[in-house]
Image (cartoon, rainbow, N blue to C red):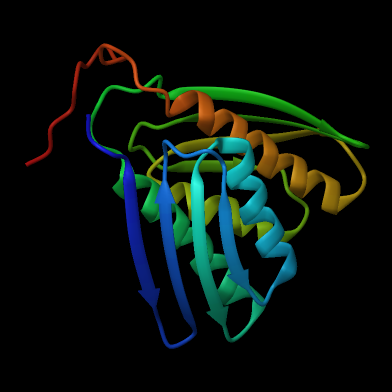
Length: 182
């Protein structure tokens, strides 16, 4: 059995981000980042997905930092996949105080994202993550009025949905069988 891990370093003029990810982890994390909310959301994603995530992230402004962190975590997830058949799809609903959020996703290499998130910075995080990971991602905020709670419930439900979708299964779950690209 192969180990589903990856390490990525992304350095631009604006950011310097390193991510180490293990799909088959225990939900542990080691996140070093000047943006405390981004740190907290990355730790939340690790804990709720069961993936181990280590990240060192520095950037010149919050937009560049959040965007490039999402891209790097997404690419690390895509790179850690080893080609074995997966459950592929996962859905999770999370309640957190006033927020009720549902995430549904498909790990299918057809990147798409619709995310109900009133904070443009974190709407961008979800979109950048989905595009870099190559997944279809829908996040629906069913209710809520506190943006912090909606964003955090979104990360929790994303983690729980990923945990389900990343489970290895015995055969491919597709009418197309496996898709090969040359």
